[in-house]
Each structure stands twice: as C-alpha cells, then as structure tokens.
Amino acid sequence: MKDLASPSSSDFANYSMPVSDLFHQPSTAAEWAQYVLTEEQIISFQNDGFVSGIRILSEEQIGILNSELVKLQAAGNEEKKLFYHYESNESEDPGQVLFHAIGGWRVTPGFHDLIWSPAYRMAAYQLLGGAFRLFHDQLFCKPAKHGGVVAWHQDFSYWTFTKPMHHLTCWIGLDDATKENGCLYYVPGSHKWGLLPITGLTGDMDAVTQVLTVEQNDVFRNKVANELPKGYASFHHPLTMHGSYANYSERPRRAVVINAMASDTLGNTARYERADALHNFPVMEQDKVLNSKFFPLLFEGDRELGSLHVPKVDWELLYDMK
Image: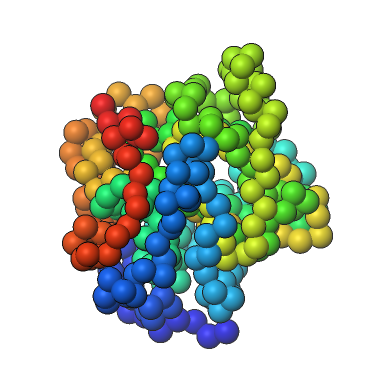
C-alpha cells in the first residue's frame, strides 16, 4: 500500500489539522450524527469507567497505520528525537517484548491524522463532556509468542503533572485483541476508587493488588477482558484500573492509544516527583493552559454540531475538577 500523500515535514505537530484524506471530515451536523454514542453507552461509561466496541478504523485505514508502524519500530535517530518516549522493549524481562512509544503522531501522516478521526472525536467529546485537546498518543506492540505485559495501573497516576483530572484514554486495536494475544482487561467501577500509588507499568502484573483494600481486591477479581476486533476501540476514565497480560499466541497484538484532555487543562509540573520522565515532553508551565502546537484543539462540539442532540457525561461529577 502506497504512503499517504502529505506535506513534507520533519514534525507533523506543525499541522493543527489533517494533512491527508485518510479520514473524511464531516461538514454538517447531519454528517456527524452517524458517530454519536447512545445514551446507554454514556450511562455505561459513567457506571463502569469504560465503554467498548466503538469502530474507529476501516480495513484500509488499519493497513495504512500498520505499514507506518513498521517504519516507526525501525525509527532512525532523527525520528526518535520527535518522540517523547521510545523503548523497543520496555519489559523488565528480556524474554518478553513490549514496544512502547509516545509521540508517533508527530512522525507519520497516518498517526497524525488518526487524532482527527470523526468517530474518535465524537466519542471523546461526549465522554469528556466538552471541547478537548490531544494530550499525547502511545503505541503498544506485543509480538507473537513472547509479548510482554502492561501491569495493572490507573493512567492518571502517571499524569499528575497536569491539572485538573479531566482526561480520557482511547485504546484502538490494530490487530484483533483476544485473551490469547494479550488484550486489555478492565475492573468495572474502579474509577470510583480514587487515585492509588504507582506500582509499576511492567514486571509484576498484579503488583497493584498490594495497595488495594480487601473490598477492592474482591472487585478486582471480577475483571473483564476487553476483546475487540481490529479497528475497534474502548474508552476509559483516567482512574479506571486496567492492564494486559502477555502474548503467547501465534499472532501479534498491536495497538494505538490516544490520550485526550479538556481544552483548559493546566500544567502542574512544579512539584512533580518524576520530572525526569518529562525530559522529552513539550514545555508544560505550571498553572498555564496547555495550548501549544503540541496539544492541538481537536473538537469544539458546541460550535460544530449545531442543533444536533448529543448526550454527554456529567463531567462535573465524573472528573476531579479541583
């Protein structure tokens, strides 16, 4: 499959709009209607902390992104400078492999334009409850037979260098995701537990159980597998407990994650205890709105949707607005 035609750029963050025709952009409220989540899906998200089974990508779009992903996994030194994080293997066990990179949207046109996917933007708008920006993207790849784990965690435990907590994660499969090849798991209702200590992203898969109460561990045992066909997505709250087990199957498990934040999110870096982890991230000044080109505004639904009725979460109750 040929590469996308796009502007010549060493950094696609210079373009705060799609650079190709990979995703058709709706121009009327009626064109947006096909992407609207139902009231039932919104309620499910508010109750469980996640909602799943939302199609984002066509077969052709999956093929294009997987072709770009091959190139990103073999990125040269100049390309790696655009990433905020790049580990060919983030696993603590050399016998298992977890490719993890942050910032692919800056490097290739397909991953750049993915953040403007209409299906993604509509769902994120509804689940955040208002206008939002890109926070950052991530790539997670587990090869066949020896793919590593992503240990149980809450996303916001790693994001306290921003405030308030008004974020959303979208996980999109670039392969069919099953129990056998290391799909994501969720703990329903865990977004109501509050912020828990970090217990690690790799290594001991179940380390988080050591910081849970007896009641929380009882709920934890009811975790559910997020099995999805490729091209489909799940969205989860920043405090929802989630993780994925190793891939011992004959198939790879590749995924892209889009992390969004409310349009008025501020930097909170002054006393961040893991400042070294932000070395390659864009500048995020304390108490200043994160509105540089590295955090593009992706959707202002109140302006773009006109009279179209769109159910949304009660964001003042669902997120920590302190």
